[in-house]
Length: 449
Ligand code: ADP
Image 1 (cartoon, helix red, strand yellow):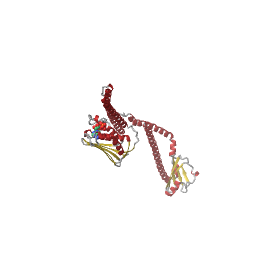
Image 2 (cartoon, helix red, strand yellow; image 1 turned 180 degrees about the horizontal axis):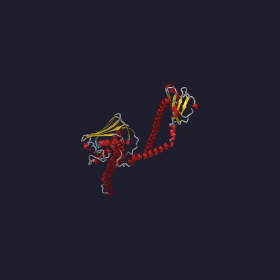
Image 3 (tube, helix red, strand yellow; image 1 turned 90 degrees about the vertical axis):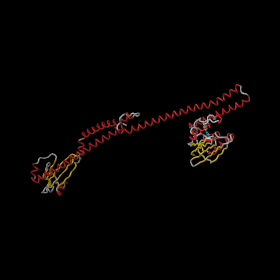
């Protein structure tokens, strides 16, 4: 950055120096030219007046000047007198621009450049009363000659300009960049900076605060995740240990031969049930982990939600019949894009709960409806209901409203967690309405796309 700033300041300083120098030179040159021109005009007027008075006498006695040349020209153009050359050898001046002008208008003026453009001759001519012309000529160097003549002086000025520009550029670029480089990004307020840097310091401060906030949020999130993971591990261990203890107990009784022959079938049945419970639990844990880690095949397919419900209800028919619960499926064949296995799991868990937490002779009504963007599944039961204070918690892993009866009902406590994660996977919205003793309605709105 410093090199760039240096370069720019150097260029600007050089340009300013050179422009100032050129401007000064031009002004001086035109000032002196104008001074000289007016001097010559004055001299011409004075010589004309003197010749008018004293004739050739004045010219012969006048001291010759090194800078101006005086010529007296007759009204027919013949040169009568010249302060430098012999008038006899000089050609007729009738056609000279300034002479012609003076003859007709009283005064005339002209200027001519030499062949090499190094000199410029200016002539002023004044007509006297007798018709003769007095002409004053002066020669001066042109700007080109001056520049050539001043070559070394100009090189010296240029070198001085370069030197000054380098010094200036290096000082300025240092004073611009040093405070920036010295800003402590973690505590930018520690040093005083020039006012133009204040917005930068404010932004660094703002970003630092934002980073700090994000770090704290991350730490909090991390701690929360850690706590959830620890709780999950403890819950899983507990859930696995209970059936395994039963299995181990019944197996030991049979192995030791202490069980009566008529009890062996009953005990084997218990072992089978507990093993089934373990299989369901492990299956649920695996599905939940998959959903949480989003480790599922991402290929979504078209799913007819009504058909899925039909399939699930036919699976649950036996369980419903056992408690004399009546099913009703109604609505439309709403189609959505989703993962079949997960949608199936969601419908199954909701309908399974509607049976499990129902009353004898109760009803379960499953309906599918749709509007342009959404397909909605609604599972309503006439069951025990959920207290309003528990509604937020039923989607937590291993959370059960009635812990004491959970074993007879046979739930793992993971069903609604799978529903929640499965719905989130499909960007679906869940809504629960429940009244204790009357029943529960859980609806899920799936976006079609
Ligand atoms: P579980 O495997 O124990 O059924 P879930 O995660 O499916 O676990 O449900 C969590 C808890 O929410 C259940 O233990 C039950 O207390 C309550 N619950 C879920 N569905 C219903 C329902 N339809 N009616 C009443 N309570 C319900």
